[in-house]
Length: 487
Image 1: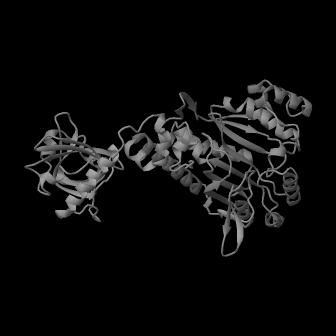
Image 2 (image 1 turned 90 degrees about the vertical axis):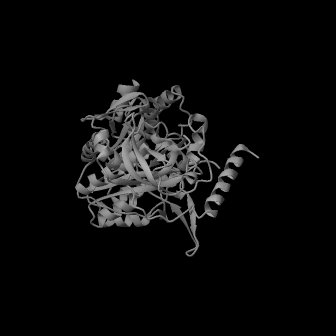
C-alpha cells in the first residue's frame, strides 16, 4: 500500500469511529461565525488586561492548518476566507466535546470553535476554546510539498488545494475580483448599461480566430462558441442602447501559451458619438484609477520591473513606434519588396503572399512589442489588419484604431467603428477571399448597419492579461481559476 493510501485508510477509520460514538462528520451547520479579519479588527489593538475584562465570546470556523498536541492542551491554527487564527484547547476548559475526541481530529478537517479571545505571551491573538464542533471530516491529508515549478501543473489541476495552501494564490483571485468590481462600477457611473450577448452563435464574428464548434440537438444546428461579442454589441448600439459594456467569456480554438488560454475573459464596450481618442482617455483614466485604488500608488512591479501607470501615457503611431523602437523609418510608404527583405532579416518567414499591411504589422510585433513596458498606445493600424475599423480620412490605407501595450503584451484594442455597410461588406469579402480563420459573411449584421449605426467607438480589454500585470503573475494560468490543461 502506498503511504498516501495508508494515511487515507487511517482517516477513514477515524471517520467511522467518530460516527460510531455519535459525532456527525458531515453535519449541515447553520452557526453564525465571525471571520478572522473581523476578530483581528476588534481585538488586535487590545492588551492582555483589556482582553481579560471582556466576557464576550466569539464563534469562528475554518480548516485546521496546524495541530500541536501537548498532552492536556492543544494548539491549532484554523484558516477561513480572511486568514488564520490560533485556537488554544485546554482539557479543563473545554465544555464539549470530550477532549480526547478533539485529539482524533486531523489537519484539513473543518471545525467551528466558540470561546473567549486572549493573547499569548508572544502577543498572538488566540481563541480559548469552550466548544468545538466538527463540521467536515477530511479524508485526505494536505500535500507536504506543494511549492515550486515541478508542481505547477498539479497546482492548476487541483486549484482547490492551491487555494488552501498558497495564500499568494488566494490574494491573486481576490485582486481579480476587485478589478472586475472596479471596472463594472466605473462603467455604471459613466451611464453605460451592462448587457449580455450570445455565447453560442450561428456565425462567429468580431475577430479573426478559429472557433470551437458545438451542436444543438433540438434544432439540429451546428453552432460556434463566440470568439468575440463585438457584432452583437454594435447591434445593440444600432437599437438605441448608445453606451453598452459586457464582461464576457470568449473561446478561441488556438494555441496555449503564458499569454493565451482558449477560454478567456474580456471587457468590451461601445460608446456612440465618441472617437477612439475619447476611448484612449477613458482607458487611461479607468486603469490608472484602478491601479491607485488597489495599491495607493500608480507604480507596480511586474517581473522584476517597475511599471508606471501615471498619466499621461505615451502615444505613438505604428510608423513612429517602428522608428523609435525598431530603427525602421518610413515603413508605411515602403515598397512590399523592401518590407519582405526586412522581415526575412528579422527571421519572419512565409509573408510573401500577405498584403503590405500584414507584413508591416508583423514587423512591428517582432521589433517593438516586447519594448513597450509602460502603458503605451499604438495608433493608426493598416486597414488589412483592421476589418471593422474606420479608415483614416488623411490616409485610407490606415485606420482610426489603437492598441494598448503594457509589459510587452497587447492589453486593449479599440477603434472608430466602421458603419458604412458597403465598405463593411467589402472588408468581409476580402477576408473570405484571403481565407482568414473563422471569417464568414454575416448578412444580418450588414442589414443592421443599413438601419444606421451612429458614429461609435468601441474597445476590448483583456481582463486576464490586465490581472497578470496587476498581480505580478508570469502566466495567464495563474489568474484563471481552472485553465485548460491536457489530461
